[in-house]
Length: 137
Image (cartoon, rainbow, N blue to C red; front, side, top):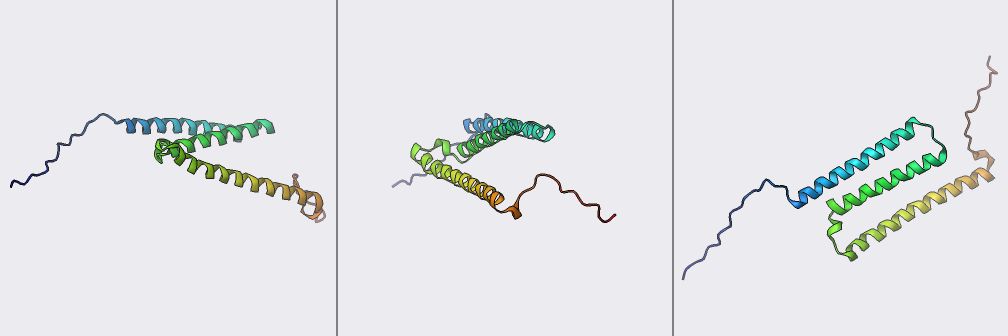
């Protein structure tokens, strides 16, 4: 009886980047581009005095770009893009519910603040700086 030995195949290292490496680099460049746009918009908001609607729209664009970066991180680095549809839905639906939950609490807090300011004058918010009286002079 002859014992057979398992012979390992030769391992060679290729210097060509694999498809996964190309995918990661493409994701890096996309995320870098989105981040640079976000930083540019943030600096514009800081340096300029835009009207409220334009400022709000710019902040909305920054939030959308942040969601795009989150999508790339989850899709590429957490490999969710390679999963079956049911697995993706299992993860995304609770995330959307969590975002709705945060928005609902923010709106509820804002409603409480507004009602408190309307009905309790002690807590009235002031948007102007209070002048100091010159009674000490």
